[in-house]
Length: 75
Image 1: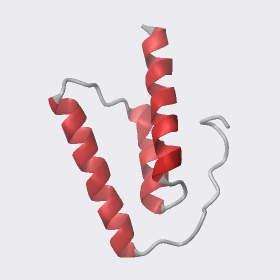
Image 2: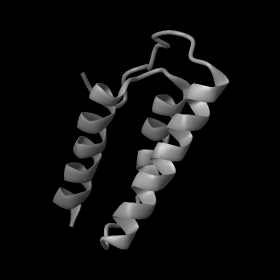
Image 3: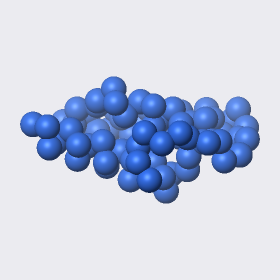
Image 4: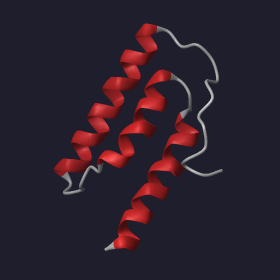
């Protein structure tokens, strides 16, 4: 599976779950920044897909890691 594949919604999630996920993403991004990591905007579509319930946490992590490794190889 590649990052550029079309993301197909898995299931409907509640507004409350979307807000919970949004909070988790914000906290993770803030924590990474505190640790000195750079947040690249290329990651935002993956985070948004997670927030909307189109992917789950098991799919989120590999996609973010793929973006990070792609960015690191460009340096």
